[in-house]
Length: 282
Image (tube, rainbow, N blue to C red; front, side):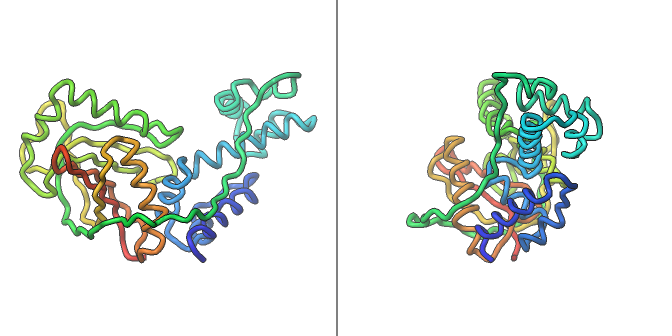
């Protein structure tokens, strides 16, 4: 089974179990890869974590149930995994903009979030250069942004985080600490061990053994193997486009899968950036 068939089977599995507890171990078995790999792959390709996708599909189905039938709001809430009407009301209003009790009213606009399905697109005509880097555990020092993949928050906040750092001179202070490998100003995405939450800490930092200055933090990057790709387009959108190409074009036939370690942007110089994706043998 190739990755395209696998991820569509995951979508089918989710659709069949929207009214039940969805076990990530079951999803992993459907795909044939580790839970972490499946969650990383899904989020990169679909643009949302599996948890957010499931939540939006359930709220979309709940709206249809309320519009089409005479069922009670609490019954619909329980059907889609909510333990109280209050929690369901909050989630429903946040997604649809109206309370569930208003869903049957005339001219009320609700949001539809249809199932995602993936099709093969012929790509790969442009070669992706890469090398494999193996690194022992190393220490970074810099500034941290606590964010999440939910609703694409991290993609909108990280560029501003960089801009603010440059404006206040923080980038130069971090560069002044640099004295260990990997050499370069680093953008480090450290995901929660429970990837389903979508939470991540993003560091702008460098590898160093120097003391931590006021206003900065340290973080230990675990020993791992990374696939390193040169990034020609250093704009935020260019970096995101390259990451998606890596996942959709390189990873499926590489013999590797995602490893549970941070993603790295390695800004070697003003004109040279690399994207490091943590991998292990599949």
